[in-house]
Amino acid sequence: MNWFERALALAERGRGKVEDHPLVGAVLVHGAEVVGEGWYEYANVEHAEAIALAQAGERARGARLYVTLEPCNHSGRTPPCTDALIDAGVARVVVGARDPNPKAAGGVERLREAGVEVEMLDSWAARVQNEAWRTWKSLGRPFVTYKVAVSLDGRVVVPGRRWVSGEESRRHVHELRAASDAVAVGMGTVRADSPRLDAREVGAAKQPRRLAFGHGPSELEVRSGPLEEELRSLAAEGVQSLLLEGGPTLATAFLRADLVDKLLVFVAPVLSGEGPRFIGDLAEQVELSHLTATRIGEDVLIEAYVQVP
Image (tube, rainbow, N blue to C red; front, side, top):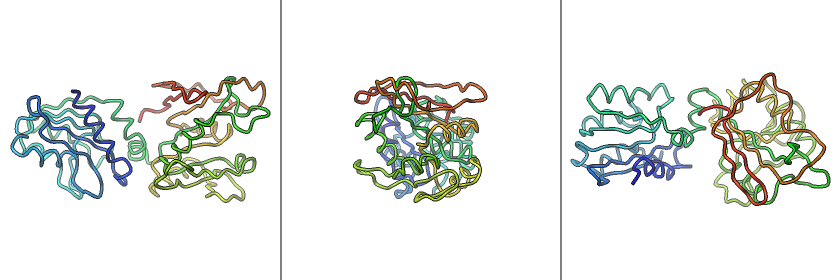
């Protein structure tokens, strides 16, 4: 078994239950046997590593720990996980990703100083699992995803059609909204479409904040300041993830300001032939990474990263 993949799967059990903390999963292995495992949930207080250690007891001595995030090296609601691992006699720790939180970082160095063998994976899967939280902690702004539906020739409208994308893609967008702290458009979209921006018919546990960037009347929450300042303000209010659904003007402004982290482009199997394209002119090219393409109904969802989380 891939023990680290098991740790990633355990971490997912905490999604929606970690408040302003990261997802963390841990698997403690002695020989070929799992002797303890855990994941973090805010209400349960204990960290994933501490839960795994408690299950293992004396079998933790000489064991290997697979953990998705660098063990914390500070005292908060719990003592440092690094000290608990050292005291328990864990021999080796395999870490998925560094902790970008300066208050908690330094666990790798602390473990090595105590003689614990540490392997740093810098796993893309581990970074992506906490992509919004990592950006929120390291950059002091929300993780921004630009979502757009386009024709095969890159236009955001198709004459004679209300929607560019198909029903399956539109349902997926509602799932994205349900998973986001905030959803935003520009005033041009407000005036043209009066969007609701809520998550409908997907069993959303909570609704995102609904924002409009720009000036003018709107039923949405209007943010009229410079983009960088508004994002810092939203981050201070606890917004970790922002789904940007605006038109080309807002998307281009965010890209020019280097404030987009991920692109989600729903490509419909149609040539529009006319209408605005989904991004305006940029001062320089934007390199993308980790591009994937997934079939959703009749459409293709192209996902790519502008920033590494």
